[in-house]
Image (cartoon, rainbow over all chains, first blue to last red; front, top):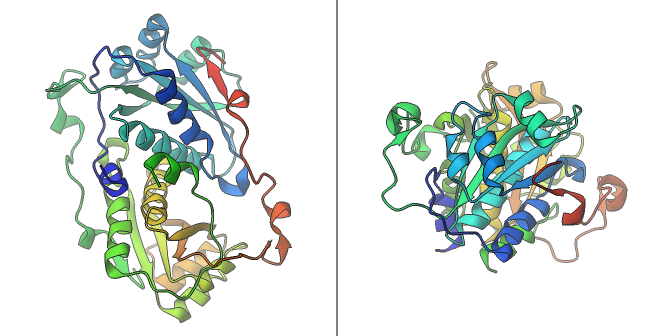
Length: 174
Length: 174
């Protein structure tokens, strides 16, 4: 895939094979996150890498749509500082990591950690930092199920495509 | 550049040549933004594309560190819905657009629009949407100045590298 294809064909992958990510692949994913730019270069993030099955299972209970974590090879929890642009910046870092993975054939899916205090206890995260999301990584299972958390995909994800450019691009002014 | 190199070598570019972006390149940048994933697929964004010199100059006065806009070939202002994960999602979309550009040799820089109401008036943006940032695009000027807004780069950007992985990666727990 070209860079453009990697970017435009990235899709959430929720079901994974048991194939392990190599240390080299995992390191490249982490480096992609590490090199992300941030407002005033504050790098408002830490990454907790989880590969232990028991911890993955427990983490999968920390969000309403997080069951994919239990089948992931690796989960990366983004820990962020409470700075003004942190949400924007961790969005950039997450995209970098997911693209670096996708370029090597590794699928990924973001989960909101709705039950943050539960995740905080599980992972010993300090009270002065946020852990809004986790990213699951693994090699995509072929013929993925058409349901998410037991509900049809289309019901959970209203749009399976994207709005066309003409509906979202404005020229010179709104 | 490989995908991994494109991701890890992306840097803010604030000074641009007068070379125009082709329509094809601009379209690929916009498509990269359009195809970004978002929480519950709500796609909480619109993009305002600005190429008019007078508007670029006026927009460059709408942020404290936004003077690079006046020298850009094209500015894309991200207009976002006020939804819960919008900041995170527009961070992802911004990263996609900057990477798609960088892969074609086009540099970019994010500017905060600190004087948002001024930008809102300039661009006729509805009151119920936010316009936190703009991205400047253009071909990089060789031998870029070592100052930003007249101040030495290092003073404005405390870190010119990134923290090493060992300082930000935790295994299994914090």
